[in-house]
Length: 204
Image (tube, rainbow, N blue to C red):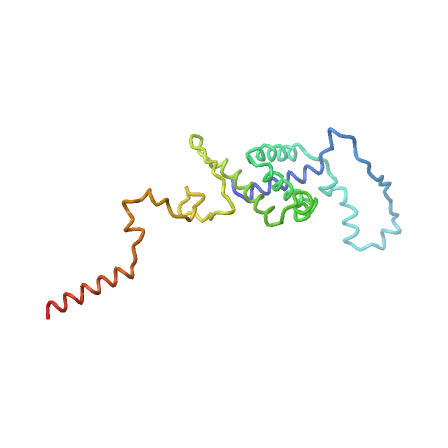
């Protein structure tokens, strides 16, 4: 499963969430739409696009009830979100999916609800998706629960390295290769040049 497939599942789950009934609390008050029936005399002056939209408005996905397949996608997303250990990342991923499904804008949610910047919200959302990817790619006998941090680099040389911290090791742990750590190409070239000059003078 790829990142695109995971994001698609969560966006579709957020769309289904908007169709599901609100349970566990009193029903919200809604304005009553009485509807308006247009006469044929009125519809005779409509354009072809307007007639087509009026005839097929009842098939609008937003007006249809959730199917069993839609509910299955929503349940799959609810199971996948359990793989994210951090609740902040869970909230960021679901808020982003809700925004993509037509809900509150993600930037507004970050600012008003979480009190963070949009950049931090995007990082939490991306990190949540990576948590799900690692959970699916994880070997059953070797759990890799090391999460990527924004403060460190994340440019692995090999596929099995998810995080690389660019720091030196402690001074007391590599006494055997101090010369390798302090090696200088300029000093090596100068030493080679001095030896070459000494051999030339000795030969003359």
